[in-house]
Structures are given as C-alpha cells and as structure tokens.
Image 1 (cartoon, rainbow, N blue to C red):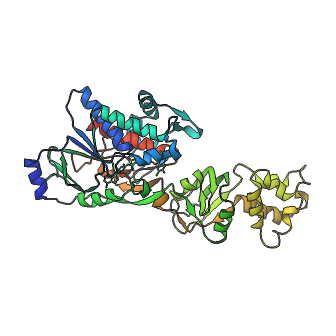
Image 2 (spheres, rainbow, N blue to C red):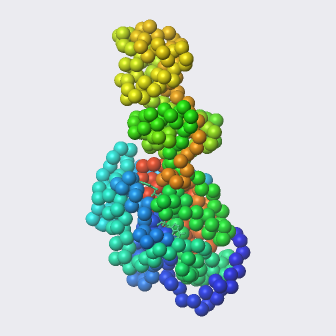
Image 3 (tube, protein in one colour):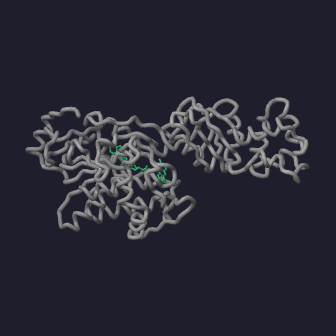
Length: 433
Ligand SMILES: Cc1cc2nc3c(=O)[nH]c(=O)nc-3n(C[C@H](O)[C@H](O)[C@H](O)COP(=O)(O)OP(=O)(O)OC[C@H]3O[C@@H](n4cnc5c(N)ncnc54)[C@H](O)[C@@H]3O)c2cc1C
C-alpha cells in the first residue's frame, strides 16, 4: 500500500462538507444495483443516506442498453464460480450465493419487467435492454438516489492516514469539473472493453494512485481475426453460421479449453459464441482446432455400409451448409482436392477418408489477433480481488472503499454471466454500505 499524505484530503476531512454519504462512481449495471440496494436498506433502517451516482456519460448504463444486441441477456440460471475467469477463482462464490438469478428475476418482476429463457439457462429481458436500464435508473431515483452525469472521474485520494484508520475520513474524488467528497466510495467504473460504449482504463489508473494491484486488462469475448488464405475463406463465407467446437490444445497458456457453440464467419475471421468464448483464453501465436461436425463420428460416417454410392461432397453437405462443405473440400491436399469430392464413399482410400476427416474435424487455424478491446464484450483483469472482501466488496486496506462489477478482476463467460456478476457484486456492496 502506498503512503498518501494529501494535504487537500486532510483539510477536506476537517472543513469540507461531503457531497454525499455514498459516492458511486459509474452508473452502469453494477453501480445502479448497488445504489438501489443501499438506498432501500437505508430506508428500511430509517436512516438518511445521500447516495450520488457519478458517470462520465450524459445517459447512464450505455453497455447495459446495448447488451445482448439490445435484448439483454440479463442473467443466467446456471450462474456459478466455474463460469468466471479471475486470478482468484473462488472470489465470486459468496456474492453469487447471496444474490441468485431468481432474486434478480424477482427484481425484474417488481420493476414491471420479465425475462424468458433461451438455451443453456440464458435469460433475456422480454422488454429489451433499454427498458431494463431505464427501469433501474427510475427505481434508483424513486429510492432517493441522485445522478451526476457528464462528469468524468479522473482521480481518487483516500482520507489522510487511512491505513488502519477508522472509517469516517473523506475520500476526494477528482473529476473534470472539480472534486467531490464522501466517506464511502464505490468503484463501479467497469473495464476498458468496448470504448465506444463508455469503456475506459480509469480503474487501472486509480489503482496506481491508491496503491492497489491491478491485474492487467485483456480483451475477452471478442472476435478472432485471421489472415491470408484463412481470412479470404472467411470473407467468402461471411454471414454463415454453424454449430462447431473450437479448442485450444493442452500446450496452450490456459492448459486447454474447448467450446461447442455457434460459429459465425465474418469478413475479418471468426465470431459467434464459440469464437468469442475461446478468445478469452487464446494467446497470440496459439493454434485453434475447429471441428465443424461436433458429435459426428466422421470416420464411422465415411465407412458406413449402405451409403457406398453417395458422393463425398454429398455426405459433407448433409451436416454443414453446401458453401462451407465446398470450401473445406478445396482444403484437401493437392492431388485429392480435384477428385475426392466426386468420389463415391466406396471408392475412397483410407488416406482419402483420413484427409476428409482432417479438413472437417481438425481444421487448424492460427489467428493473427483478436479484434481487441474495440469489440470486446468484457475484459479479464481488473482490481486484484485479494485486496477486497468477497462478502462485502470492501477494500481490506481502505475502509469505506468498495469495488463492484467489471472493475474487479472477474470476467464472465458469454450467456448473461457478466451482467449477473454486476448484479451480485453490486448487491453485496449495497448491503454493506
Ligand atoms: C456490446 C456488448 C454487449 C453485451 N451484452 C451482454 C449480455 O447480453 N449479457 C451479459 O451478461 N453481459 C453483456 N455484456 C457485458 C456487460 O455489459 C458488462 O459486463 C457490464 O456492463 C459490466 O457492468 P459494470 O457496471 O461493471 O460496468 P459498465 O457497464 O462498463 O459501467 C461502468 C460505468 O462507468 C462509467 N465510466 C467509465 N469511466 C468513467 C470515468 N472515468 N468517469 C466516470 N464514469 C466512468 C461508464 O460510462 C459506465 O456507465 C455486453 C457488453 C458489450 C460491450
């Protein structure tokens, strides 16, 4: 922990009137639910609590409003620590247990909204992302919270002599339009992912000032960019989607990862859930294996008796779009590409069958890069969770400082897990404020 001895903060504690009891920096989903929870708790306890949400944007929660392509995949019925990436894989457990998808769905109902389940426990808001964000903001205002929008935060100075000190001193929040003061501050400032929707690296910069460790942010849930012939192929297939398995081998930095999900070909390379999910684990230079026929035993299929008269290209087109089948047939080794597609199964040699299996089930590509933060739905990394209580999200060394949502080193899998973490961590802090 860095020693701070800011004369400004010292005098602030003595002479300056706080702007609020609780300053919530960032009015995204984590900040909104934190504010709502804290305001309702205070009301129930008949306590007067001034809660002020501060955001750089004129309208809060832009990522939430864009979530799920405007439909908001707002939670997942299977929310559990296994669906989150963090240096400390158990950190999410308590908060997820104390704020379940059922609790969030009950809140939706109370706000006059509803959600419907799609595949794999994914819950989408029936009224859409915009309605969800607006309902939460309205609920916060109704509970007495105030908003200060268009106010970028630039710095944070803890109360002087904060180490081991009792809570009570004032935090000084630097903003582009002057400082704000409060005894309790919540960092709900998100991650650098998708800057066009408000992602910034402010949390990493604040961490430096506060002496907190920040796990370097990396783009997660972002498309994979291919180059050369692979990129040309994807361009040809742009818009085509298929169920596929994308895998990283045991030699990869993550020790192996595999996702069977939708794969979408784009003009840049690979997108869709399977590619986005694998991107969170992929490191530059690593090879990805694509199986375009998950669950199909290709070797058995090619050898099946009774289909001996079928052409190789016909068989492939039975379980993938014809355009894709033709493209993969072109990838057969020289000498095979010209004649194997029109051979009958009964005429295929063992080597030809193996080659067909290879181009369909073991297509190997090495992406040039990911699409980076610009198109990342989340970022891994963030404030090191070791410094925070897993129950309250309060900083162990800085009483009165809390962090929630993507500001912490927690990144969820695709499917509503990131928003659920925003709700669960925001609720945990809101209960403790
Ligand atoms: C396109 C897209 C679609 C997504 N779809 C889904 C989905 O369907 N389901 C799902 O679970 N997750 C989805 N996510 C991820 C999810 O939106 C995020 O994980 C979630 O919004 C994180 O919540 P948060 O409150 O921690 O941060 P954010 O939502 O990023 O909120 C942080 C707030 O802080 C503000 N802020 C940032 N810097 C400053 C500053 N310097 N000063 C003042 N204010 C600042 C921002 O303006 C923002 O309002 C999606 C993300 C994107 C980009």
